[in-house]
Amino acid sequence: MKQLTLYPGAKINIGLYVFEKRADGFHEIESIFYPVGPVNSNLVPDVLTVTVFHDKEEFCSCLSNDGNMKDKACSCLSDDGNMKDKACFCLSDDMQKVRMVELGLDYPGAPEDNICVKAYKLLDADFQLPPAMIVLEKHIPVGAGLGGGSSDGVCTLKALNELCNLKLSEAQLLEYAARLGSDCPFFVKNEPMLVTGRGEILTPLLSSPEAKDATAASASGAEASRVENALKNLMEKYTVRIVFSPDCFVSTKKAYSIVPKRKKSKNLNITCTNKPTALDNNKPSAPNKTKPETATDNNQTQAPYLPIIDLITEPVESWQGRIVNDFEAPVFNEFPQLRNVKDSLMKSGASYVSMTGSGSAIFGIFTGGQRRTEVISC
Image (tube, rainbow, N blue to C red; front, side, top):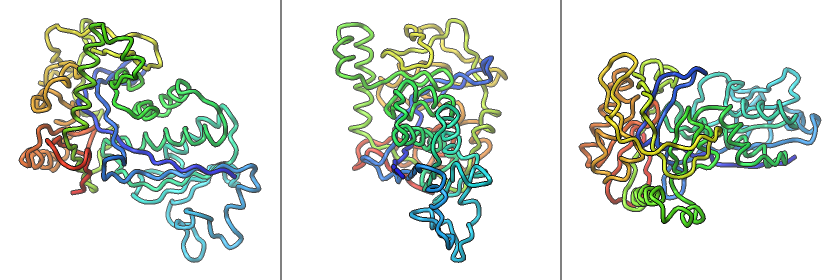
C-alpha cells in the first residue's frame, strides 16, 4: 500500500472573455488565471489523499471485519458501521477497483461523478491502475468559479502518476488534464497564465531565468517584462480579498447558456508575449491594435474587446470597467445578491472588483494589507 496527500488550491480570473462556440462544441475564452493557495493566504485548501493497493485483497481489507474504515475514511461511517449518505462509493459492485470518500463541504452529484473518480478512470483506461481509495476533504466552495474541482482532478492525476510510477511528463499531464476539463490544464503548473483556446492554451506570464535571458533584448521580451512586473507588483503591493456566498451555487453549464458570446472576427488576435504551453503548437499572433471588438451573438451590448494582456500592464486603479468578466452581468441578473457583494467591496475601498470564473465568488484588489490573499464567507 502506498499513500500520498496533496493540497489542491484555487484560482481567480483577471478578466474573462467568452467567444462563440467552436465546431467541437467548446467555447473559446481569454483570461488571466491567477493561482490562490495557502502560501501568504488564509485559504484552507482541499485535502486529497490517494492510496493505492498492491492487489484486490489488500484493497478490500481497508474495511475491517466490524465495518469500520481505516484512517480518514472512518468519519464517513456511522456508529453501527453503515455508510453515511453518499460519503463512500465503490466504482464496481464487487468493491475491487476504486473507492471515493467525500468529506467536508457538500459536493453536488453522485460520488461516481466526482472529478477525482473521472481522473482515475481516465488513467486506468490507459495504464490498468491498481485498486485505489481517494479521500477528498472539501474546503474550497463548489460553484464559486474558483476552480477547486478542477484542481482536485489534476491533483488526482499527479498523485496517481507518482504512486503508480507512470512517469508521465508535464506535457502528457497537460493532455490528460485537458481531457478532464477545460480549466484543468492550468493547475498542472499552477502559476499565473494567459489562458486561451478552450482553456488548454497556456502562456506563462512569469518568465523563467532562461527565457528572460533569451528575450530580454527583443520587443516581445520587453512586453513580457512589463507583464511580469505588473504581476509582481500585484503580488507584492496589493491584497486580494475573495468573498464567496455558501448558499449561492452557480452552475457553469447554466452560466454558459446565458452569457452573451463575442464574435471572434478574422482580424481579432489575442496578444501573448511568452512562448505558450499548448496542446496545439500554434504560436500567438502579434498584438491587435485594431478597433475594439464589441459584437456578440445575440446583439446585446457588451464591453469592448481589449486584450487583457495589454490592460494588465496598466495601473490596477485603471482596470475597473476595462478588464471585464463576460459572465458577470448575466449571472448578477440571476443572483442580484452578488451585485450587492461587489458594491460592498467597492465601497470598502477596493481598486478593482470582479466576479471570478462563472461565479459566484467576487474578489476585490486593495492597496496594501498583511496578506496577499484573504478569503471571506458572507
